[in-house]
Each structure stands twice: as structure tokens, then as C-alpha cells.
Image 1 (tube, rainbow, N blue to C red):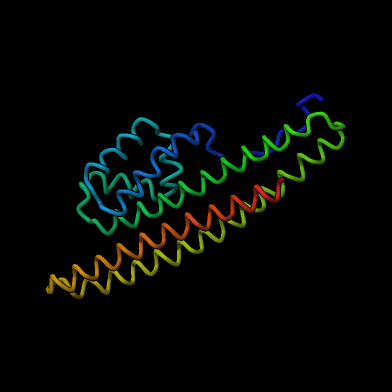
Image 2: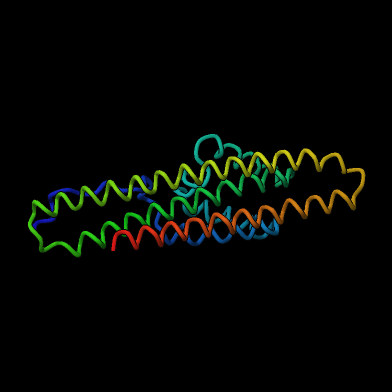
Length: 204
């Protein structure tokens, strides 16, 4: 069968960035969110300098200027950096799911190369539409979850500022916020893994 019938539309629009590049930088972002280590931040900056395409994924739109501003400020506002990097991590995970979706389609279609061209065209169209819709729905759920979490972070950070004159309470509040961030990241990782498993099972 000729392979020029229909080329499935890619889930990802960032073809110049590989899955390996994302898998390299995502754990570093997660590590920085957890411990805010300057050395880890430097590693992230180095990765972004070497792979400019990652900036558009991790910091889309106005987030890019926020990242550049915070880099120049040498991380003076640790909360702003943590919030920004939480968004970057979320964007990295979504992009990884899209790239995995592309691979699922490619692998599944290859299994049907010997069927009639007419059916192959129909099959490619159907599974591409299904995966695209599934990932779009997942992205919407993910975006809503991220937005709600960041709003809670803002509220709790403002609440914590009231205790700056009491170091013990302020430190305890900061630790609580960090713990909640860790829980959020673990939750979205579990959510996305469950989605990928369900998608693979459906395509099988």
C-alpha cells in the first residue's frame, strides 16, 4: 500500500523539539520546584540556551518574558519562580503526551499497511480524530486543574505574607505550600499516565 494517502495531523506543533529533549529538561524543572536549588536552575537555563525550541513549549506567550525577567533578577522572587516553573512543568507533560499520541497513531497505522487503501484512509482519519479529541479534552481538564491550583497558590502565598514577622509560622506556611505543590505534581503525573494507558488500551 502506498503511504501517500493521508498523513495524520500531528498532535504536537513543536516538531523541532524531540521527546528526548523534553524528557531531559522536565525532571530538572520538577527538581527545582521541590528544592529551588540555584545549581539546578543553572542547568535548566543551560538546557534552554542549547535548545531554544523548548522555550516556546515551557513558557508560551507572556510566560517567556516572565522567565527572562526572573532570570535577569537572579531569582529574587522565589515564589514567582516556583509558580512559573510549575506552569512550565505542566506544559512539558502535556507536550510529552502529544508527542506520545503522535507515536501511537504512527505505530497503529503501520500495523494496517496491508489492508485496502480505502479502508486505510478511513482508519487513519478515524484514529487521528479520536486521539486528537482525547488529547484536547485531556488538555482542557489539565488546564483547568492547573489554573485552580495556581489560584490557590496565590491565595496561600498572600496569606503567608501576613506571618513574615513571625519566622517560625512563615517557614511552616512555606513548607506547607511546597508540600501542596509536590502533591499537585504527583497528581497530574498520575492523571496523565492513566490517560496514556487508557488511550493505548483503546487503540489496541
